[in-house]
Image (cartoon, rainbow, N blue to C red; front, side, top):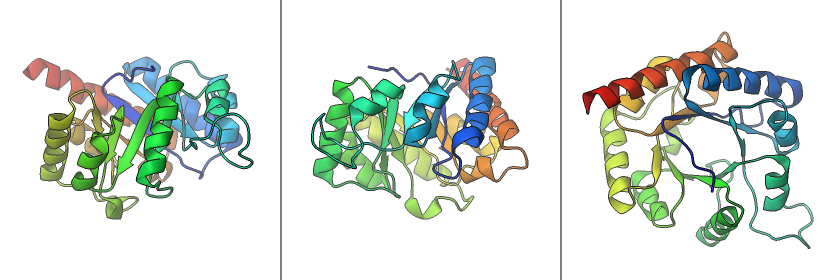
Length: 232
């Protein structure tokens, strides 16, 4: 199983970028991971997975979704083995833009484990996060859906409550808080509050220089993690 180190930053351009533009940002993320030592995960369209994997060395190439089917019939569905063969080491599941039924989520997580791919499973509230935690995701992204893309970060009490309650269910789950993350300061604060990782889409893509924003976020994350270690 791919082990995700902490802290981790997920650079998630969704479907805004593809091809050469996607690779440009992936290379910036690769550089940030190498220079800061932060684990950087990078999502990309399915067709770009092999392209990005073959042109980077330090990022965790992450699929944006997959289906639970096995090799054989399944025209038009996303075969897990095809993602793994292309170089994906992790997969997002149950994002607000591509939600799954509980049965399909469980089946797809099982397929990911069979292929030793790390799972990043989304939940839109602490209540849903606690239910999903019982399924054993590697990373649980617990974020209020209404804050996605707004630039408004979940308040401190939400971060503390989410991380504490999820770890009570399973201390091995890595907790990610990401709604509204826009600046390096946002990244620093959420890691200082106890989250294992964070990430962004619009906070990176709308920056004057998205590549520089990724580096700023990675540096802020490394700083927060170092201070957390020193305070223990």
